[in-house]
Amino acid sequence: MPEREIRLWGDPVLRSQCEPVTVFDENVEALAADLVDTARPEGRAAVAAPQIGVGLRAFGYDLDGRTGYVINPEIVELGGQLRDIEEGCLSVPGMFFPTPRYEFARVRGVDAKNQPIEIEGTEVFAQMLQHEVGHLDGQVYIQTLPAERRREAMKAIRSADWFLARMS
Image 1 (cartoon, rainbow, N blue to C red):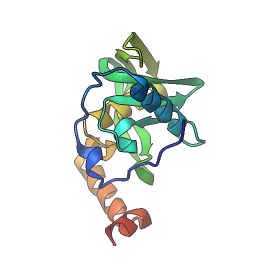
Image 2: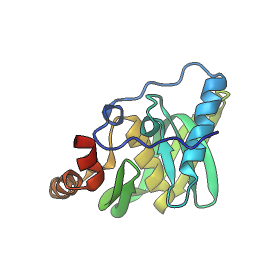
Image 3: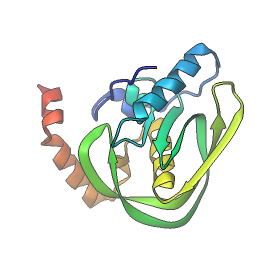
Image 4: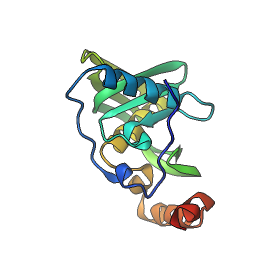
């Protein structure tokens, strides 16, 4: 399946709550494959459906030797300490900010055949799970930053070449 174009900050699809997948057919299988293929290139970890313009609850990942996807994911457990971890996002290219994330996360969802799956991880994998589920809830990580950091991030975004190009 093809790697898909990433939507950038300012695209309304990134701020919209995603709908659950209710029909499990070849279109859902194709979406899952596209998400994984889009997450695979060097420097990426995961991609949520709204980042490729699809308003459905699904994400694909390729991180730490683990590759897969989750449809209709929900975070069912967070644990460890809440720590600031340097974080970036394909939809906010070239920018990284310390973001509060738990050290452990567990997500439940289903696969493209509507069979239950559960994935969990620590450190960077836990960060990815929290980040991607946030996208499905209509949230880009910039929105989770403490107020001062969020102001700094917004200032950086407004002066970024990719953002200025979108505005002209």
